[in-house]
Length: 123
View 1 (cartoon, helix red, strand yellow):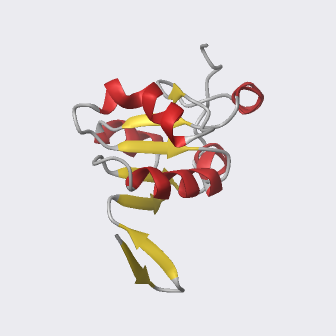
View 2 (cartoon, rainbow, N blue to C red):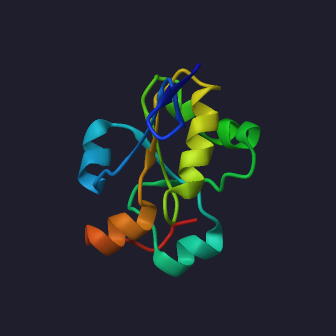
């Protein structure tokens, strides 16, 4: 399942860590999941249409999204900087058949560099 690729970082089948725009995410048809905590959602806002599920452990996280990914669609994870989504995504990709994509740069990239205007979380 692991294959070494450049700089000693493992590549995991079914996992990608890359920069994506909100338009690219939405056009892909993937389930977008913001894995940050509620205080973070309120502090910066969220991407409109994102599912808000704090990643605490893989089992409860998968239970929260399983119905929405049963059709086999990709899962895109977003956090503040991309670090949490990279770790969570690598783990999840080994547990499910769906492709898991970590949004590199997270909300810092999407809001700060790409200029996306987040919305208030609807909980």
